[in-house]
Image (cartoon, rainbow, N blue to C red):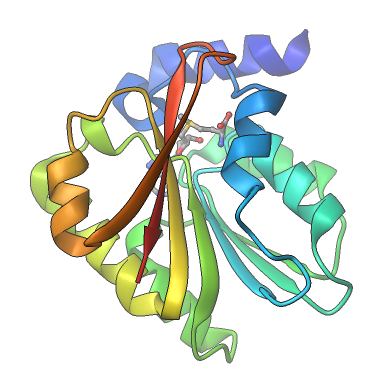
Length: 185
Ligand SMILES: C[S@@+](CC[C@H](N)C(=O)[O-])C[C@H]1O[C@@H](n2cnc3c(N)ncnc32)[C@H](O)[C@@H]1O
């Protein structure tokens, strides 16, 4: 499958940034999105879409008047998404997730209702992790959600310091199996 091949190629090029050898499964996508109320949550942010497994599902579910800001740092993933997504509700950003507040403001949004993140946080230096978590929290509305998947709970304590309220779900139906952390502001 070309999508899987392309993903693996990016992994070999930039292991720490890509953080996985294959795109996430539809089972993980379902768990990542199940706590989003697409009728009321209309400013959605996605961090690290890769080949767009979650992006396509969000686009399918989001309201006609909702907006999706998508941050992808990898050149190849960004270019492929640019080619394949033609939806006026989507703003594709070729920049780092740390700048989420800047881009929300630039696009005249005061806050995000929820943030869906696939960033391989465990691979990042502690300071970069902290910076992404804190900017995400600041970007969210009160009670907004930061939803993050991880292959282990190794950095849960650090996430917990930024987001004291976390609920955890798990799916074995992914390679590798994954935890879904839903963090409330
Ligand atoms: C584990 S992959 C997840 C891809 C996809 N969401 C999935 O689940 O199949 C992580 C993605 O995060 C992107 N990424 C890594 N660091 C980033 C950053 N600082 N800002 C935005 N995207 C980043 C990578 O390029 C990669 O596409």
